[in-house]
Amino acid sequence: MKTIPFSPPYISEEDILAVTNVLRSGWITSGSIGEEFASLLTSYNRACNTLLTNSATSALFVALMAMGIGEGDEVITTPYTFAATANVIYHTGAKVVFADLTKDSFYIDPEEIYKKITPNTKAIIPVDFSTAHDLIFDENILAQQFTPNNKFQESLGRALILSDSAHALGSRFLDSQVDMAAYSFHAVKNLTTAEGGALSFSSFQDKSLDEEFYTLLKTYILHGQDRCAREKFTLGAWEYDITVPGYKCNMPDTLAALGLSQLKRYESTILPHRRKLMSYYKELLTIDTRIIMDEPSIFDKIESSSCHLMPIRIRNYNEENRNRLIAYCLENGVHTNVHYKPLNKMTVNKYYQYQAPLPNSYAQYNNEISLPIHSGMSLEDVEYVVQVLLKGLEL
Ligand SMILES: Cc1ncc(COP(=O)(O)O)c(C=O)c1O
Image 1 (tube, protein in one colour):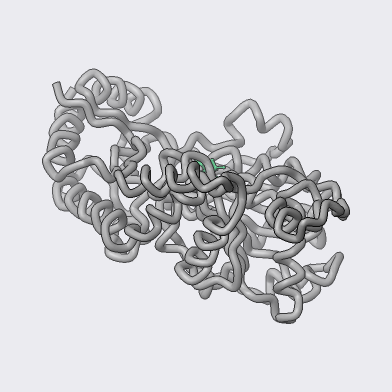
Image 2 (cartoon, rainbow, N blue to C red):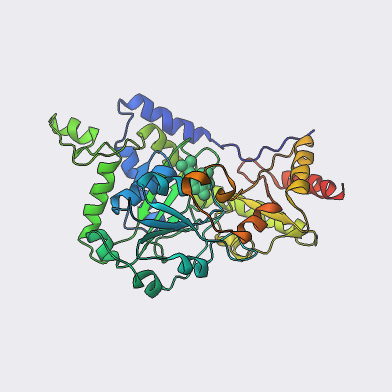
């Protein structure tokens, strides 16, 4: 029997060579390779600057911290995401406020966001589910009740739009309406550093703040130190100050080398392959009326998508039928997944203390199944997955 894993990492010989070169170099923590990777990401994401971190989670977290968001503030996000998105809000001390999805969509509804805005709303974290989804925000509404607490917030003049773009490298660009985007390089992501992430941000209206903000971010990922290890080493000066109670979530060069090596072939090889797989899935599945694939951001823009997930929904299915289908696929060697069980339905919600119902999110989750899509798959593998899936639907 064929086995199709859900999303294994794809590591080339060049990737291995890039990492071993760093291992042999004598400098294995954050250094020049990370600088090169961050600089390439900045131009690729059309951003003002990029900070490398050890995960998308920490990229989101330090973005909120550096913007001065914390206790007494509120941050609006979607419940239809991995826990990281809401957990970072919780850890800043701000209140997690969920806004429901647009009906029959995987994406947060701007109208629901507007209903939840209060004078305490400091940020909105939309999630790029599978690929970038451009919400068109009415900036006047985001500014109406906004009360800035510091110069960065003042320069923005409205709630921060911080995109959780963990899935969306190659489709989320910073010349869109978002102010900052956090990307994930976790092992299952399109581009991996095993664990890793990045925060790209656009220029502030007051451009003199760009460098200051970047310096603050850099400080936050290294315990608040005013110099990184390499600066201390090259200057030959031991002395440093701790300026803020920061965290420790920088990316070492061993991992940056893997990311840099993959980024160099991301546009030429990795993305086109994912797009080919998704197009073929679409071709084979759209004719089947039992399957719902009506999300325009995912299925109408494949040529510019990051194609991170291949999410379908099964008409008239509920959790029970869906879970049975997942078990059938697994018995036949096809590993699938569900994205996502809404966070307000998880035990962790007792910490978020979110109360109001979110029916559109539940409706999306109820009959969703994510099919395998990754660099190691062939078109024949797609045919096999579809064959197993359609057989499973007959049962
Ligand atoms: C939507 C979303 N946000 C955030 C994360 C967290 O990414 P990381 O593991 O790099 O912190 C993930 C990871 O799966 C994710 O899918």
